[in-house]
Image (cartoon, rainbow, N blue to C red; front, side, top):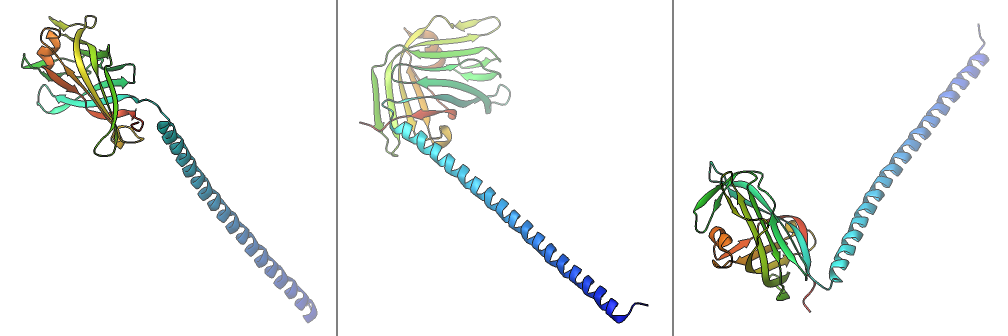
Length: 243
């Protein structure tokens, strides 16, 4: 039998051990909490630094735009053409474009899907897939004018002459040519609504004036005046402040 003194000693040791364990455990939990708080703080700081870096990049891009001396741009306009079966505007046709103070072009390299082409002199023509090509390339620039639009956005007006290559290559008939150009006059209007391209409000319109004697193929297809445009799904228009 242990005497009372021995029991008291053992009890004191057990109590001391328990107290030490509780203190150590609480200290460990506090350290874990501290580390988790530090981790959360680092995550927040990294997120803030990332946002600040994006803001700096955006400011640099805007500064570059403001320092430009001439307007330029390029991208892709998307337009919807009539479906051969339903007649609904559900077939996408993409027009690639580019311009600066020396040159401009707009082109449709191919049509992946069949569509109906409403023409000026031939009615509605079925264009099967991979049958359509169109390219307009400026040969002269007579006017290159930057103005401020009524909405406050910078605009560019470009006029002059161009070569137009249009080809509809059907199985038993080829209309037009990829090599032989037809001459026409044009008017380009582009709008710079700020950094962000089409989603920000940038637009590009390429209006061409076809004459039956100098551009008979394009006149038959597009008529005396046709504007090539659409929803700008890619690219950027950059126009400096009017001087």
